[in-house]
Image (cartoon, rainbow, N blue to C red; front, side):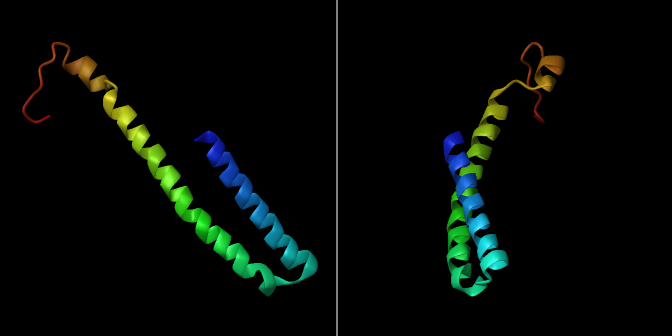
Length: 83
């Protein structure tokens, strides 16, 4: 997952560098703007999927760990009705 994230960041960096080069050095904005925006538009859903998977894993990890409330206020395992 970490390598995919690094590849994603590298791809975004290459697209931005190419886009900035085309605008500031060459001056051809319109010839490559569509490719740039299409690439960014294709990368955004992948980034959202990766971030949502990481968030789900993080939430599951937190849910499985014992919280400080459980250790301090319920040492014998008693669960009140409002919990």
